[in-house]
Image (cartoon, rainbow, N blue to C red; front, side):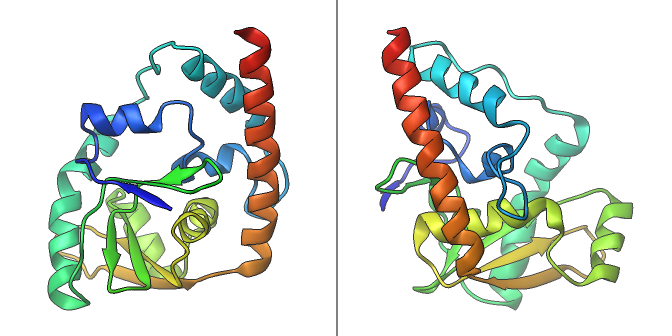
Length: 196
């Protein structure tokens, strides 16, 4: 694995991700049970376009997402103070061609993924006390990319108790994910060559 140490959301960070399947989009490749996703083809075509030189389309951003980006440093500080010291990194690129942007690394074998959802969703997460199904692919995918042992899912809302769920490697899921990612990358490269 190679760490491209640039600030996340910077121009260099966006450049490093062009045409690369990333953990935040692994749900477009596989479902939370490891089966191929219905969104696979559309995501494949998007990455082919990027590899052919098109600028990535602006991602959808709403007020809740912007709020999450603004709150993320506060959540990271809370984790570093109350749980463990953290290190920020830019983009992690796996040798097999897929990558991720962890929200932080912890010690030699841990990492973290921060979510700053709406109040109602945060309370739902607090009640559930587990990793929400929507994030299985991203959390396990980041473990695949980095080779780390655990990924702390952190749900944060100001003035409320945070939720920290330690997620260990699910080797069965990671194995399925890797198989689907390698198929996806092979198809991505073949289609790109065909359309050059």
